[in-house]
Length: 291
Image (tube, rainbow, N blue to C red; front, side):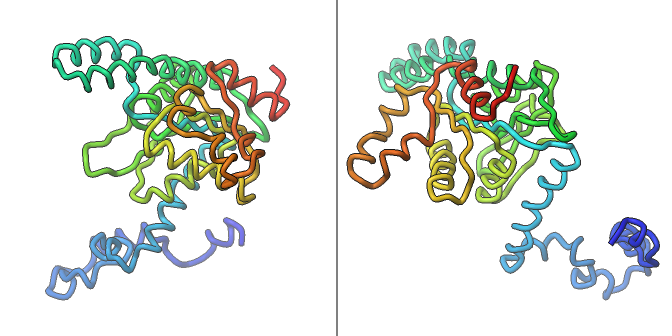
């Protein structure tokens, strides 16, 4: 069916029907009751448990349609902690911890300060890739995509912004206050209710994923990605793990292979690196991109 076929139809669009309904008959007990509200305008109805499949579909379709309209062909996804400070913030947090007199707080602040350099590397990678402005088949490629939050996520969106490029933020509703960082491109800033749909959108357009040190959320995203590729549900893409000292301290990958719960070859699903330049070289080699 062509656009002309739709235009030639004599039916009104949903938006027009909504305006008719809002300016419709005088208010009566019947028209005032929620049952009379158009189903797609009835928020209470849409939030019912039985409508969960519909909400799943909406969270799948909205970002997909808007990203397609924005001519975004592929993304470079950046996962990482929401707690790692920027180098500028690290000194302030160390001073605050020292003033508290709490040894545990001091130890944690020192550990996080050691990882502050990854904020810089995330920024550099995002800026480096964004400045290349790669376009294929009329669509923009390797658009920086983060979870839209602070720390490593902020660094990625900030790097893209400083390169004069747009970037995507896929935020999630949480019980505590959560807002997009100020560097996400406003019309590419999305909010999700379902973690599952958010993680799906991270990978639908991903041509590479950079994983920085992080906590449970980063582990969840990283392990789902390697599982999808390991099991053949997703084609291989470059997975760049920043911070070998961190990752090998918190996860014994070699032990998993030695125990036989994964294959030795599964350790080749990701690549270690420490700098933005190393990460881009890995991605460029994988796709045979010439600078």
